[in-house]
Each structure stands twice: as structure tokens, then as C-alpha cells.
Image (cartoon, rainbow over all chains, first blue to last red; front, side):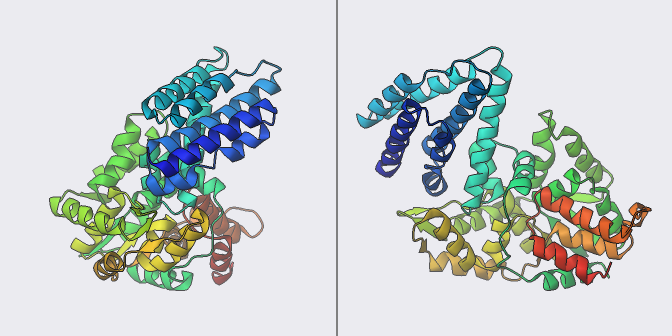
Length: 181
Length: 229
């Protein structure tokens, strides 16, 4: 793993554990965006996976709180992931994160379908963030294993369009009209 | 023969807005072909047919192909040219010594097909592709702002990419809908409500926007205003 990515993931893991210990669950969603810059530039699995994991975790915990259920206990596992990464054991880190994603998915039989949807939504959400950072829809869909149908529909409803920097609307319209004359 | 090449985005915007049928109507007043590449067909049809979601939309696109409204370009030269363009596009900007992969092969197949088939226009709904082709400096500024890092510009790659693609005309699904509206193709939906024509135009433009066509609210307002409805 690149040192810059490792450093950022270690910081994210620490922030997540701190937030969980303080029961500051609202912070998790924001923390999940901390590796998006790395994901946009390097386009490797590790920053994307941690972003998806933290976002999914924030949703699952909120759901548990709403239902008055006990939240999944993940700090010890996150600490293992942190320690493995700090010791430069990338493979052990990835194995712990993979196991944690599975544990979250299997946390509650009643919530199983919801959690699977949450993990899927997390991938869409993080893909839209990558797109906001300048990566095309097709490339972000490819990176997160999503269909462009799904991603484009989500982006259309959530991403605020900035003023166009390309051709002016009037010129585009003129050219479109010419095609059909 | 005139040709318009479609990227996957505008077909998705139109299909998810229940406006895909407009292509058949528009083609009647276009003496040429509407085409997609093999890579775009894969994303639009082959992939969703393997899932539950968007399967019906995929069938509608397949129907357009079977009825020869849309043709599929099966040309190895397009694939080869697309690979060449992809290497260029994905080496224009870099950060921390790492070239940033902005584009994907399917999008470059659309651009490659437009070049090799001398297309009259390419329909692209997503902003990043359009900005890269029309104003790459703006893309660099956007990415630097979002990534909080200064990007390195590969002038040679940019120059080669720009030289190859500078004559491409890009339009969006939003312009196609406006033309369709002006030609009366949407008139069957002028219903008995106040400002019916205005509501119709606004509703279709907003529909494609919300389904992924990159257009600003100001642009939609400008179109509605210019149509004097």
C-alpha cells in the first residue's frame, strides 16, 4: 500500500474508533469521505473499501439506534485493522476489513436485507463523490462495480450542477437544430 | 450519410425519463443514422439484462436496435482508436506523480467512433467528458479545488488529445428534447391545465436532468424562456 494511503487510512480508523467510543455516531458519515481524495487520485481498492465500510457502519448504527437495538461492537476489530496496518502487514489489514464487512452484513438476520442495501448504497454514494471530484461516471461505476444506470440516476438526483465551462447553451441548441433541419 | 453517435448517458437519461421513444420520432427527420458503440451497448443492454433493476429499460434499448433506430458500430478500428485516446486522456492530469484515470474505455469508444465515422455530433450527458473535450483547463481547476492539491498538466498529452478531438460537436439529451418539442413531437402531452406547453417543456427537461443529464437550472430556465411558452 502506498504510504500516503496508509497514513490516511490509519487516521480514518483512529477517527472512527474515537467517534464510536464517544458515541458521536453522526461524525461517521463525514469521516467516510476522508479517503475520497486518495480514491480519486490512486483509484485503488483500499481507500474505496474503507470509505464504503465507514459509511455503511454509520447507517447500520443509526438504524440500530432508531430500533432501540444494541449496536454492533466493532472497535476491537477496527483496532486489529489499525495495528496490522501500522505494522505494515497490508494483507492482515485487508483480511480484517473484509471480515468486518461480512460481520456487519451478517449482524442481524432481521436487518440482513437492509444492511445489504446499505452496503450497496454506500458504494453508490462513494461513487458519486468520486464523480464530484472529476472522475467520469463510467470510470467511477467501473471502479465500484456499479452499473451506469444506477449511478447516473443517483447522481442526477443528488449532485448539484455547476455552471457549464464548455460550449454555451445557445450554441449547442443551434447545432442541434441544424442536425434536424 | 449523416451520423449522430450516442454515449450511454443520454440513452439512460431518456429511457429513465420515459422519453426513449423520441429517438424513433427524431430519426424520421434526420437523414442519417443514430449509432452506439459495442462498449456502450454492453453497458446499456448486456449488463442490465443480467440483473433485475433496469432490465426493462435495457429491453427498450434492444428494441431500438432490432428496429434499426439505433445501429451498433462493430469495428475493431474503433476499439483500437479508443485505447489510444484513453491512454492520452488518462495521462493529462496527475497528482503525487500519479496520472489520474478520469475516463473509461466505453466513453472513449464513443469519441473514437465519432472521429473515425466523421460524426455530425456526439450526444454526451455527463459533464466530465464534455469538459475534458471542450475546456480541459476548467476540469483541471475543478479537480484541484475538490482534491485540494495542485495537479500537474501533461501539455503534450493534452495537445495530442485536443488535436484529435477538437472538431467533435457535442450536444446533450436536453438539446434533443428541445428540438423534439419545437418540432411538435411532444404535442400529444399538451393537456388541459394552465400553461400546458410550459409545464410540458419544463417537465421533460427536468426529468432528464434528474435522471443524469448534466444541465443547470439556469440553462433549463433559459430554454423555457427562449421558447416563449
